[in-house]
Length: 117
Image 1 (cartoon, rainbow, N blue to C red):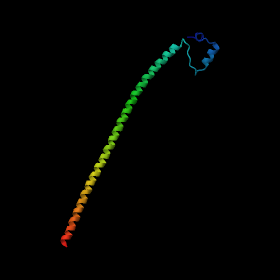
Image 2 (tube, rainbow, N blue to C red):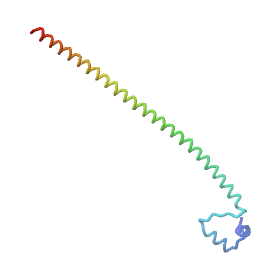
Image 3 (tube, rainbow, N blue to C red):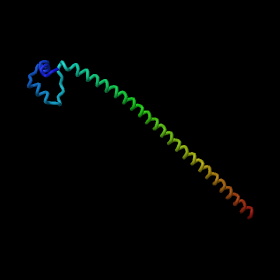
Image 4 (cartoon, one colour):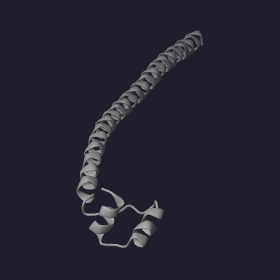
């Protein structure tokens, strides 16, 4: 559409049209151009939706991987705690055996002293 057709379509003067064209930040369409502009907007919206859907799929995959990593970390932490408990239990059993051996020696030493007296 040419300038004259747009001026006629909008029903404005050439001066008003020239003023509007000078302002690049203003986006406007006459009724003749409007259907094409809307069609382009809908195409862009559709493309944007496709991109957003793909991004959401990727985001969900990343979130799932993070949850799996968090689960693995929790299991590793529990395994570490169990190993520490096992080591503590072994140490306690070892200490108990030492105490029993010392008690036995003390008892035997005490018995010998009693037998000697």
